[in-house]
Amino acid sequence: MARFKIFLEYQGTRYRGWQIQQNARTVQGEISKALQAVFPGKEFEFSGAGRTDAGVHALLQVAHLDLDTRLAPAEVRRRVNDELPPDINILRVEEAPSRFHARHHAVSRIYLYQVCRRRTAFGKNYVWWVPEDLDLQRMREAADIFLGMRDFKSFTADEPEAKSTRVLVDRLEIEESGDLILIRIQGSHFLWKMVRRIVGVLVEVGRDRLSIEDVRRFMQFRSGRPAELTAPSSGLFLESVLYEGESGEEDTQEGMVPLIRIRSHAPAAKSERD
Image (cartoon, rainbow, N blue to C red; front, side, top):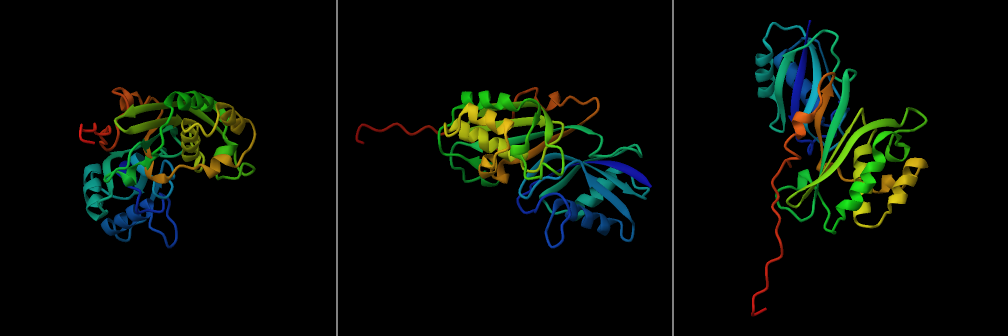
């Protein structure tokens, strides 16, 4: 039995998330069907580094695959990709140590969220359009509140009594690219809907509908307000999964790069006849 490390990307719009579910189309389910088609009758184990929600995308998801085969990693990739729908793509397959576990051995995850400041005909599935002006300085000030080992009990759909809600957030950056506002967050792990609720709260701060003190209170006392502000899944991407010895700096050394190009369009100047 060989163990492989799988690197893949997918557009999550048509799927009910990563994890296999009954009577629902999922990314893990589609890849499992492709594996069954390529290796009929063979048992395998296929597990990802994290579970993305319905509609969430991945620029780089990592998984491990246990499979009894003599095929080279590149041939496994080619044959499985031939069976996959076009919105799921295996980027690379590598041989991995038998003890490697995609989820348990990951030390950090990086998510990217794209907010668009104008209506777009091409990027609806990849952004959250926010037509109001946003104060990025206030958003950055609020973002600092989330850094470090903090309790995110107000920012998860999980039951705080059932699991720890403490998460280490290493960085939370906000930058601009044309009409896109790019929010990147890196942490040890993330709770269910945590990133989308953080983004929703930051946008409300940028709209001046929440204060910096409101955000501090959400972190100190459990509140249902962040749940009401959950950002849509369309703008969220799992950007990278990091393992021991990987810094992730290679992903950001040239600054944030948006997935799609959305040009800024200033209002046209009025003519003398207007």
